[in-house]
Amino acid sequence: MIIGNITRDPEVRTTPNGHNVSSFGVATNRYWTDASGQKQSQVEYHNAVLWGKLADIAGQYLHKGDKVYIDGRLQTRDWTAQDGGKRTRTEIVAENLIMLGSRGGAAAANSASPAEPSSPINSGSDNNSDEVIEEEVRVEDIPF
Image (cartoon, rainbow, N blue to C red; front, side, top):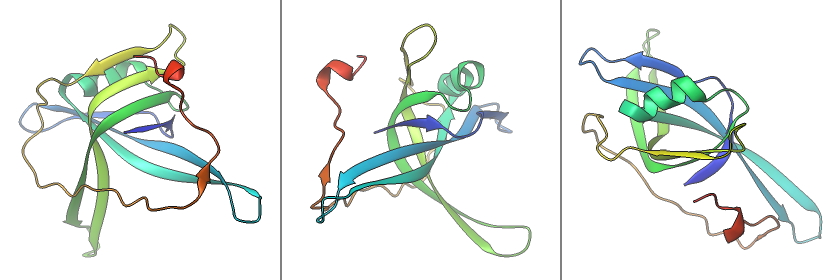
């Protein structure tokens, strides 16, 4: 689950099997106070992939700079590039999407039965930080 800002307009494509897929970047921010009391921040960039109806919604309603909530699973893909080099990319394959701060209010979408083909996944989280996070999400701020 992440909340962040879209870094590039969603690109919608259709697979040879006729499935729509959309991809875009999402930037998340982390804030904390270090051991010396200094405020720190860090930006992390993620690749998001949406299939089926979620892909259509993303292509129609999302734009660079929009704030979104995405939940899904992590998936790592490997391929050989045209230059012969091996490439790897870890992506968030979205199952749910909520548009935050949109002009018409928040809107939610989910993928009850994703049209994505089966593929191996690599998921997990190892956030063992002792740092204190300064900004926290309050229950009142969650739009669902």
